Length: 355
View 1 (cartoon, rainbow, N blue to C red):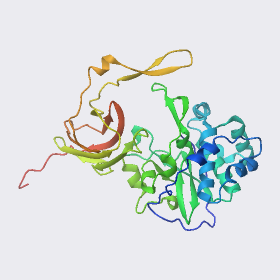
View 2 (cartoon, one colour):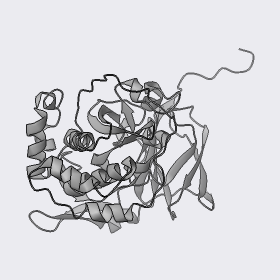
View 3 (cartoon, helix red, strand yellow):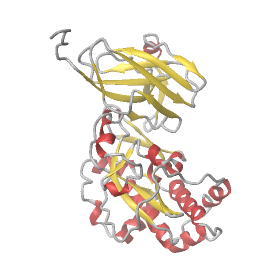
View 4 (tube, helix red, strand yellow):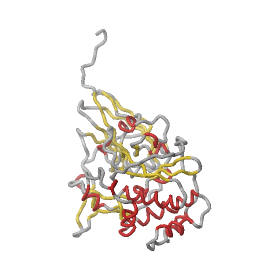
C-alpha cells in the first residue's frame, strides 16, 4: 500500500534492540474483545474502552492494533484516484479532521492507518511514531529501491522500539494486471506485521530515516539489492542461498538455491525475463462487479518444472544460466510467484589462462 508522511524526531529515547521481537503471548481473548468494541463518535472513549481491561502496555497496544486492522478497510478507490500524487498531499491535512474522516468512512490508506494507530496509542499513554519509507511488495522491486511511499509505526514497549504495520496486517487488495489499479480489498488479519522480528520486518520495509533501522548493520543499499519476497509466503520462507543480494553470474554458471519453507510444496518453477511459464490462473468476470481467479487448463498443460531436493522443510535445486541477457530470476511455489532476484550477467570475454 502506498503513501508518504513526514516524521519529526524530538527527544526520542535511543533506538534499541536490534533483532527485537514482540514477546510471544496468547492474545486470543484480547483480540476477540477488541473486535466487539464499537466507535460512537469519541476517539478518547473508544481508546479507553479498548485498553481499560489491561494493566500492561503490550496488551493495550495489541487491543488498539486489532481494532484498527479489524475496523478500517483499505481505501483502494482513493489510492487509485491519487496514485502518484501523494508526495506532499496528506502532510498538509489537519490531524483531527483527517482522523475523524477515517473513522466515519472506516477507510484509509497507509498513512491513515499509521496516524490513527499512533493517535490511539498516544491517548493510551503508549509511545508510538509514524515511520515512512520504502517497501518491496512488487516483483519489479527486486534489486531496486523505488519511492519512499509507505507508512507504518514504531511502538516503544519494555524499553525498546518495535516496528509494526497495521495497513498490511489488515489484509490486501486484488490488482488488475492490465491497468495496475486496485479492484477490491479483502480483510484478512496477518499477524506477521505485528510480531515480525527486526530482520524479518526489514525484508520488505526500510525507513527514510536510518535512525528507525532496528537491524544491526543493515543499510539502504542492502535493502535496495535484496530480493523481492511475496507476502503470501514471507512468514513461512527463509532464503539461505544465494545471499540476499543481486545475483552476479556468467552464462553457463550453475546457481544453487536453498531455502526453508514451512508450507508443503509440490512444484517448483523458474521464470526469467527470457523464458516464462504461462500463468495458470486467469481473472474471470462473473458479474458486473465481481471477478474470480480460475484455472487456465490450456496454460497448465504447458508448464515447465524444476527438479528439487527436499528434507523436511529444507528445499534446494540448481539452475543453469543459459542466456547472457537474463536480468531477473523468480521462483514459483505451486504456480504462484514466491521470490525474485535481480540478476547481472557478466558479458565480458573470459580471460584464458596465461593472459
